[in-house]
Length: 208
Image 1: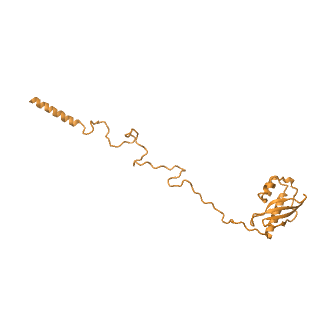
Image 2: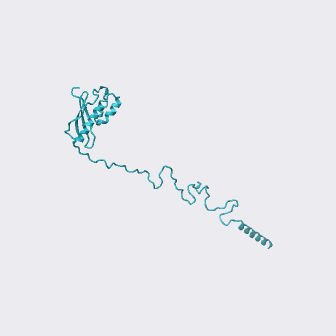
């Protein structure tokens, strides 16, 4: 009887000791293991063995994209729109009607005189001679006279007053200009009534 009581007490003590030392959940407790917080520590591997992403901030949202210098930010146009070009509102939209009067004749005579004077300036270098004559010629006449050697031009000066000899057209005129070797004829033209007279041809005296 006494032996049975001792065996029973021993079994109860072992059962109590085992119950006290066994963890309540999940098996034996390692006293050296850090206490789990239920969240991954920064930089620690996640369930898939990769470190936690470092691109998220403390709120869990991805960081705002930084603007790059020289590049448009959000909401800004990619191309800068320049101002509209300005137009000269004073420029005539239609050609000015041409007509003959004493002012127009005087302008034609002056244009012819200036043309022959520049043509006769043979004492200048070829470049200076051309620089003086070119602005007085039409764009079509410039290639014709550009390669003229001024040393071969026989006329040297204007000796009298020019005279308009043909004014049949309001946009064309012929003007005779007296020189030291005879009368040169200058054919003038203009784009409209407001445009200047320009020389289209320089004709030497007949028989020269």
